[in-house]
Amino acid sequence: MPGPGGRAGGPDAPAGRGFPSAAVRSRRVGGLDGLRTLAVGLVVFYHLGEERLPGGSVGVDVFFTLSGFVITRLLIAEYARTGTLDLAGFYRRRWRRLVPALVAVCAVTAVLDLTTSLWGFDGALEAAGLALVSVVNLVRAAQPGEYSDLGAPLAHTWSLGVEEQFYLAWPLVLLFLLRWLRARTVMIWAAVLCTLPLVWRFALWGPDAAHRIYNGTDTRADQLLAGALLAVVLARLRADDPRLERLRGWAGPMAWSALGVLALVAWRAPVSGDHGWATAAWYTVGFLGVAVVSAALIAGLELRPQGTLSRLLSLSPLAWTGRCLSYGMYLWHYPVIRLLASLGVDGWWRAMGTVVLTGAAALASYHLVERRFLRAGGPRSPSSATTRAV
Image (cartoon, one colour):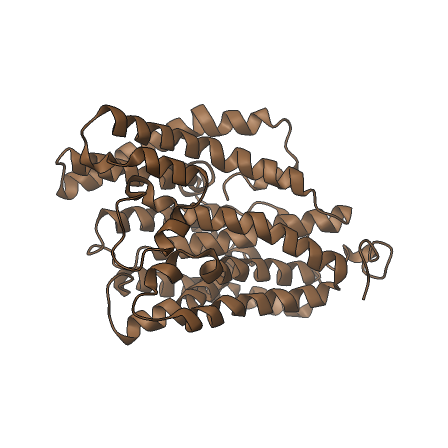
């Protein structure tokens, strides 16, 4: 078993240290940006009323798998080029990408709590503190009954907590695997790690375990790891590998089928409430099942960037929104919904107002906050530029 750095001059080194396609597959794919737009749209309409789109929270599941894929693809590309990972640089880029915009939304909600009597922002000061240290998901996971109002104005940031906790741990784990194991073994271990949260969910499942499972990073990690595994597999395949050609042949039908399954889940799958065996299945195998379907969709878009679905999702309005505004839209949509509800706006007026105000807030966030901090980091490498909208 090779030790740290032992592979740099070994037989894998000429082929990208065992990942010959890593650099090629670190480019930006417009279809994936469009997929972000669809995913955030599902989440927004789910929060406008579960009865409209009972499974709309599947957009978060898609985000998890997409994030795991993009982050791992970039990390492997860096390792293939340099033989190591600049962890400090990675964490700095993540901080610039995620934290300033989060601080802005936390500040606004806290001010509304302190200066108004709007019920939708009661407790926003405490919620902002929890969101800023990325523990909203942990607080929610510890509540076996109904969710308390603690964190409510920023309750949607639970998913950011899951992602940020994953971002802290996964690069360290991946670097260890890359340094000590052969590339093929890294792929095997990524697959093994995907199964552990599934086993853990079965061990935890019970009538009062839904919040623990839904919000826990340890119980949702397989969704991010499914994307990571996909990135490892694709990076392992050479451009002339016949298996890659077969995958490309299936990519179009696979992507359309996966999109259809996700649309059906969003339309019909009731995520909240007690629905007997269906709820048990969703909170155990369902999360990994959706992750596999999401990974199939991502693979289809990645392998067939000129395919019909990828070209549709790459249309400028969809791709630009996903690339530049999806994070801001996710941050702002829930406070906007609570603002309009506190003002007595209801029905379709609330839906239309949410779309307009969320879009305006996301534009302001992008131009006034996010771009400024990204530029403050100096010239970006190709890999860091690609991480902007993860």
